[in-house]
Image (cartoon, rainbow, N blue to C red):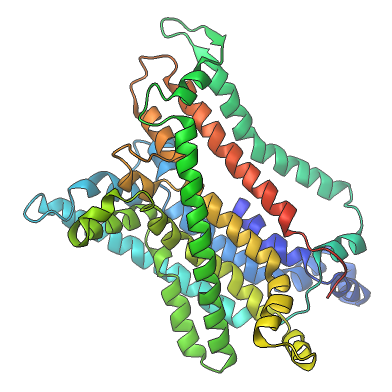
Length: 416
């Protein structure tokens, strides 16, 4: 749900309102169903399909949810994570190495097929359109009616219910010897002191924020220039080469978090073992996993920017750098902020690669800390409430991140 909103909403918010008004004046535009199928679907189908593909990728490579919500069910991701510890060792449990290799190959083929289809579809369906500022569009359309308000309320309740339940579980402590419960903040005290784990909540939070910030810088800069390179190749008539670069930029998405973590781990141990003790090591797999998201968000937006804006900048005597700063960046601001927010949120919640690299306990992130707490025997009544307290901090940080991103994302002033 969050991915669909993040992909589709920036497109809706910057679409000129007069487009729909002009469509309403046509005989075919009188029906709401016709407007949905003949106007909104052609305008939004590229963004919607991108969201569907990434939703499939997230579900197909899910590890933490399967690990705790369906522990008896095996997926390719769970298989590689659990059995991958013995893979790659010469002469030791060769059957496990073959099993992990086969699972990784099958997973990679499925994900590559999905990404190739999405990339080809985006290249064919993306068209240049005029963009307006979000504030201009919001003022023109006016206040939402009752039905959109109800939809926003339901979505808000749906999104905040898990956070509320986790807060409730962190202060509701079950008596180990009976069915009774008591309400207490003891779990929060234990969590902040780190009495049951190698790291406390402040330490794990600091690690998560450092890795997320590093991931944001690396993935956004790299993703922007990759998307710009692909767009430039398309404008210069090198469509096939652009499609090849586009597909290659998506290759990290064909590798799940566990696969990336295993690859980084085995590669470092064989090439440069000293690097395994480097504090910032998790930034590498996090950036590898998030850069394709940045490319997929920015590239369609670059394709849809009307080239007349750049021509107008040339007429005004702007240099290439001035056109980039004064024209392209403001037009891409919603997508850049969305890409940055998704990169940080993905890094904060990334579990598979972090679980592989950080199992020693030295630099635990919040997701790894939650997993370690949930893995402990439940003989101590505060174990699960402490895990819920840690998960609450993680969700609050992610929620706060998106709130801040929304504050910085809005355009100011009128339309372009």
